[in-house]
Image 1 (cartoon, rainbow, N blue to C red):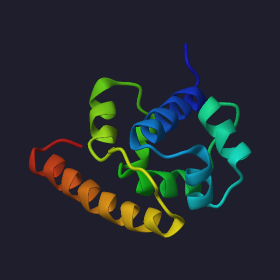
Image 2 (image 1 turned 90 degrees about the horizontal axis):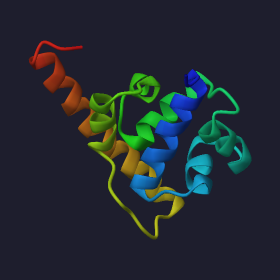
Image 3 (image 1 turned 45 degrees about the horizontal axis):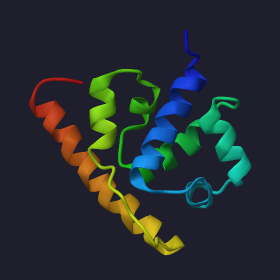
Image 4 (image 1 turned 60 degrees about the horizontal axis):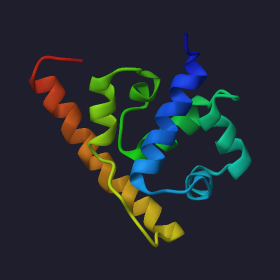
Length: 116
């Protein structure tokens, strides 16, 4: 059985790769060393909640979805994942802002459908 750190780590890695980010880019965006972020993805270390919120904003999903190990959560996480290339450090803030808009839309849609 997977630990919670492993589930979160798998979700982080999957979403990062599908978005075309490197570990270095995500680490810089959230203010940690690449080695620390690598430990989060591998499930070796627990991700502090304040960093999970930053990561969720960057990936455009609700933080709680990073704890889910199911297809429905995968689909919602991947709704805002898109491949990028040649991203500069300042671009990451703009990408996170756009994904936050999509995340808000998905949340409103869930509320409108009477789900969580």
